[in-house]
Length: 196
Image (cartoon, rainbow, N blue to C red; front, side, top):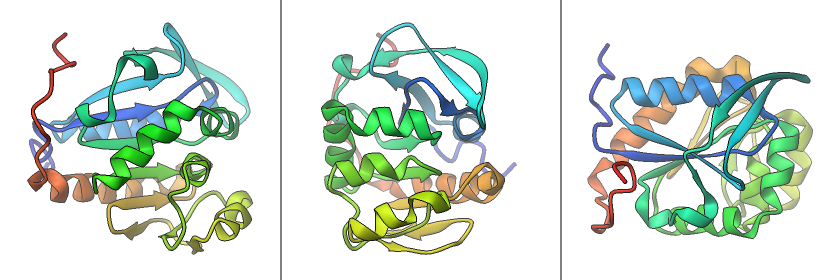
């Protein structure tokens, strides 16, 4: 229970589109909210996004805002769930690339799991970073200049990464710890989109 209130006041963007790995969104979201963070599901389109359990369609979730409706400066951190189709679609979105690039340049934390590092590759962010991912995209990460390792969780500066749903307990714990550390870096005042 020591995580309660650790992240109070933090605003976390969850970037997903359809066919994200459901557990990689719902479990970290629950851990963040349990620790006091406010989370927002942000997608490329309004309405709903649908998760998958591996290759089986799962539940639908309401989109809180679209990428057109938010600015990265309004958030303290980003969670990037995996799922191959979700990650492959998101990496082609210029607004998603700019979002993570801006968050990363500001030194704000990013938690990324499974196939989700594809977005960070396309945004040009992974060169020189130590990280892990789903094993099938390790060559993509290495070719983009990352130092890929096969571990359940890797912390590198303002990033934490994991491989798959089986790593979620370690991932969630490392993510909450990283986000809590970063709370000292206060945001510039901006409109409170959570109460809008």
